[in-house]
Length: 242
Ligand code: ADP
Ligand code: MG
Image 1: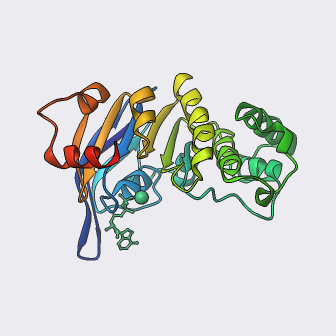
Image 2: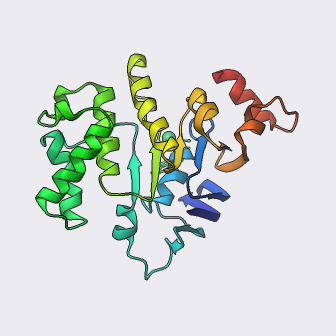
């Protein structure tokens, strides 16, 4: 579903990604972890064509991001993205947040968009809040609306960039629960997170990044298992957060 091939990226003379390659298969949940500044956000944003890169290529469902003929807005509309800060439109109601892109980008009618949006809102357990504004919701609820909004676009993959790290601890669980549900339903997911409980429970693979490189890319069992093959950097990272 996602193929990242030898991607390198520079900000000026600073190389932020070095020869990154990995594949995410349909229905697979891949967790990306690593120290702050290692390039996790940059990597995940390249998949959504939000960050350009200078070398390599990425294909999503067989469509190349770097092919000039590719309709990037269309491709992007099929790749759901959930950020650390929920980035809901504060001046729009929950329902309007859910329907805006469906109407503007996918050309759905208001009724169609509403039906789809509210169905997704129900899935994240927030139907009762459909007429509220983001400011009237808790952080955890806002993040669940952000997930429902992404799902309303019928994404073929979902990308998450530290979706729970800006939340108060008591709200982390409710957002992870929604993500676990999605994973169980077979959604293809790439998730930047330090929630190793989530990684252990639902991921299939774990990628560990350090200084712009993919240092480990292995089955979760191998990553969490007591293997001598784990890189010293991953070992050190895990010992700090577990
Ligand atoms: P992570 O998500 O793993 O914390 P990022 O992908 O956000 O890492 O950043 C990786 C590196 O790239 C960091 O050193 C960061 O300072 C740098 N960086 C990120 N965005 C920019 C930018 N727009 N210009 C220059 N450097 C950047
Ligand atoms: Mg980041």
